[in-house]
Length: 330
Image 1 (spheres, helix red, strand yellow):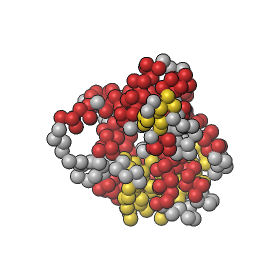
Image 2: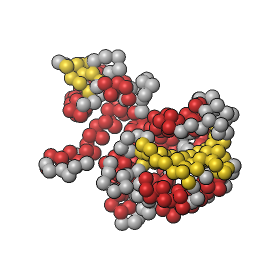
Image 3: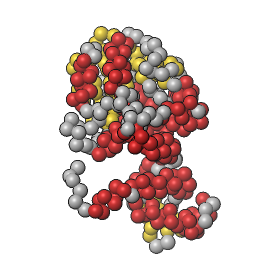
């Protein structure tokens, strides 16, 4: 991204949190859902939502200014992207990812970024010990992971694979998509007990309980099944220290059969550490999870994976500007 030259660009960054809070508030109030059937006046929408018209007008004005809504005459309507992604009944809806994971968990955690930069540990995963918070986190992560999972499923051919080990697989989004796409594939997901409980329900909804099972525990400590055809780590290495990354890659090598495949999907910045911006921001946030987290780049990760004994490493984009997929062979 080119260096900024205008004070208004600084302001845009400084005020960015206001825009995100407006989005979260509109999602919590179900503004986009109430407009799914067509445009409405302020008064009609206020009656639907049970909110005072004056206060609602301030939120709607902000949403129009941000491009989330349109205003024609006196009638508000969803912008095209809002209709597709922020209405609960839409197949592509992932508003809950913003409502729960980003708003309720990531956003507050970033308040501790200054402390994390000084090396103070913030126990991000402590909130997952609470069943309700774990449920909100897991469902939100499910919404945010299904899209990348479908991309990964198109990028890798797992034909003939029978055993997948999904390390810190959370809701099971990746296992669900990969099993649906690959006949005969079964998966074992390792994750915390509170997360596994929610993931099991989501797996049942997809009719995959006989093919996807959960192993409860911290992936850094629990014993891993061996002789797997594929080991997948998605959004895991960006949440642990460099030392833990090396240990996890060693465990992945031992958990794979000869010729088996390692898949690492995660946030990565360019090798020159100049961006892209969104991946860089996610890796900055990762410091609040582990102050000694690795600065993931394709080159650094390839060296780490090769050092663990893998070969034929290849890195390709998944979510442009945000995540990439490393594939390697044992």
